[in-house]
Length: 146
Image (cartoon, rainbow, N blue to C red):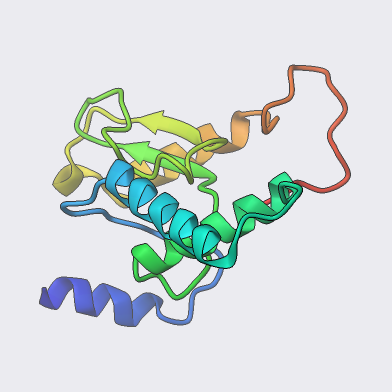
């Protein structure tokens, strides 16, 4: 715990990246809880004649998910997920946020994952073409909806 607090202190002013380490976390549980919160709120408010736009529904869901996760910041899409330990699956980790994430799999276990290994993962990430659901060669939209 002291090492975690020390690392948090060293990086408290950082704004370029967010590192999430999940311990005893279930994305399915969080998604189900957030969906239930949205459903209860919608039932209490009464159903509108027309469904809200997809972006409005997603924004409401993101707020509910942030609330369920006790995350003061809005839930953000992940850009890069590094899976350590030789596994090649997400294992119920950040399922909503990982929709357009780039995945890098490392054979190294977490305690052995060094700064050099992280730099390797970042180099791999930067070699990739980010398409956010588009096919290769398709024109990118002016702004990504989030």
